[in-house]
Length: 157
Figure 1 (tube, helix red, strand yellow):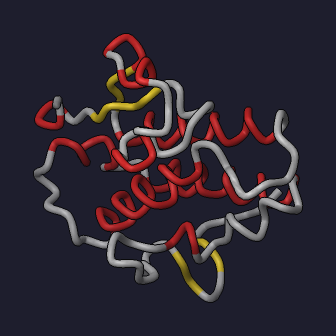
Figure 2 (figure 1 turned 60 degrees about the vertical axis):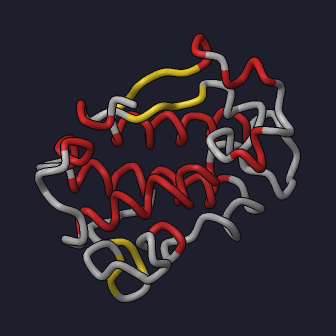
Figure 3 (figure 1 turned 90 degrees about the horizontal axis):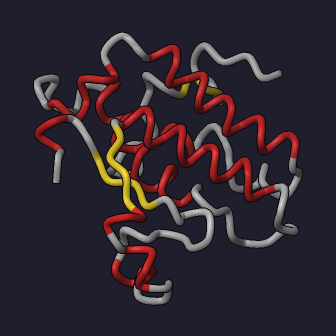
C-alpha cells in the first residue's frame, strides 16, 4: 500500500472484469489480472478519471446490458469517498485526499462527464444519475454535491 503517499492501486484490467479489488468478484477473473504488472498506483482524481475512461471506452464495444465496466468501482467506492471528503467527513490531513484540495470544480466536471454518458447512451442514463453520483459512503446524499435534484455547478452539454 502507498496510501501514506496519497496513492491507491488501480487494476488496469477493469475494462475486462468488474470489481477486481473485491475478492468475491476477483475470484471469477483470470489470476493474471491481480499480478503486479497489471496494477498501477494513482491518486484519487487519476483513479476516478481512469474509471471514467473505462466506462467511456467499453460503452462503445458492448450492447446494452447490466454491466458497466469501471462504473461500479467509481460509484460504489471512489465517488462516495471523495464526496465524504468534500462534505467534511474526512480528516483534511489524510494524504490520500490532499489532491482534492482546490479541485472541487474539476471533480464536479468529472461527475458531469459521467452524467453526459447517460445522455449519450439511453440505457446508461438509468444507472448514472445525479443522486447516484452524490452519495457518501453511508449512502446518504451529500448536500455539498447535490442541490435541488442536480449536481452543484453543473451544466450538462
